Length: 211
Image (cartoon, rainbow, N blue to C red; front, side, top):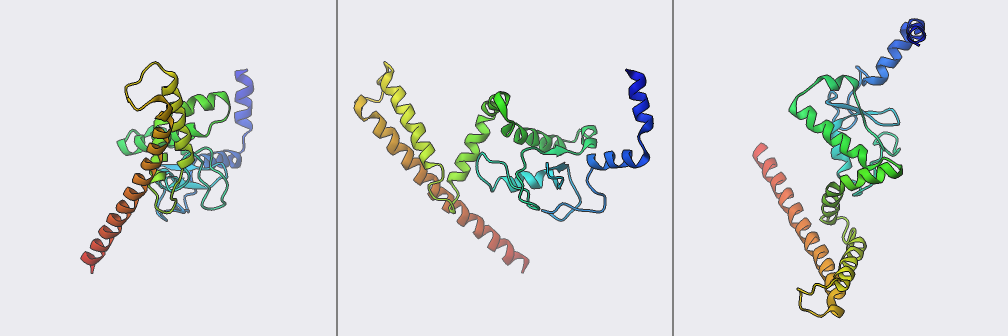
């Protein structure tokens, strides 16, 4: 078996070896299409385009809560990010953190039964992204229906349980949970408007300082 592998290795031409190496690393004469700078923690999308790991994850943050982002170059779904092979040799804190986030991204979009298990492990990330999406002023009411369904399920479970610490009557529990979900959606939307206003104000202040 070892002799066969050795023979195949000897049969590889220099061109084939070079192509294999290039597939594991970004082009040396190219740059990240998002920041237009040199690649930092380079990651390859399934379509073959390379990006800085931090750049493509930040781009994903502006997308749907639990959907893979589209490649900015060809619009194909990026269901997996493959870091540059040589990154395994680096132990810097920044590189380690970005690689950790890349692995979390990949877990969200693994198919099959194992993929569902990994999604459960990343449930905190999904909830965080969902709340962030609900604060987006450009998407009022985002995930409101999901939030109401979740609230109704909680209300139903409370109704069926022997506990009654709310003291509002079991027949009113589901309505109270439903109204609470809608109120939470409105509060998050208003907070998103405030957050955007504060961000724009800081941008104006920085622009005034530069002038």
